[in-house]
Image (cartoon, rainbow, N blue to C red; front, side):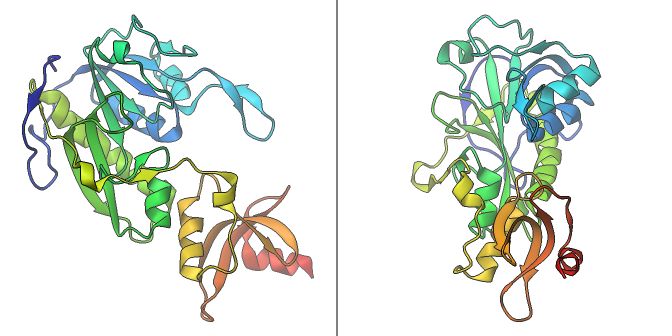
Length: 289
């Protein structure tokens, strides 16, 4: 992709220019979280990855052991060069004309953006759900569909003009299912955008902007006073990566799967007691007797 911009519209359907059979492109990838790691792995199957830009190793998990990011783990397995600065600064040796950004987790300074084209993969139908938790917020809100947007990275959060977008129904998917579907679509959309030497970018509609705020501990706590349908959506939105929290039979647990029961209330299906393992809810209840 040449580092030039052209205003214009996107096509209907998948809303992306270019053919389905993409040519190999030399790109860099900026990714950290599992979603970014998945997209990196898929891109590496069809394009030349010059380098991965990721966040530094950090304490993770219950033991707080210093661990490389999921994206770095993929890059190491693939033998890719890895850059992990505390702050991304101009002059990074990314060695490619285009950087694909996907769940990187840090702001990219304007001076660095000006050095080459940066394409962001966002798992929502922008301008709906800009921000840190678009998949979770879409499920919690009861959205019937979501999608993937490929847009130019700009200073303002997720506000760049759009090169490609594709919708898909959420149905009964949990967050894990949505992320998996989004990663597959993202790689396919990027094939066509990267193949186009002069892709068109369409400005986002300013009046339709909503924000997906970062998840907080309070978002995990199930309020028994809320309708069961809402609680089930929270469980789906936080599975399988975070988990919803509740007190059942006087004991704190994480709920991983649930449904609306025959009585109209929340029916847990899979839970995890604090300090224990994940298990079917009926098995846990029997163990309490």
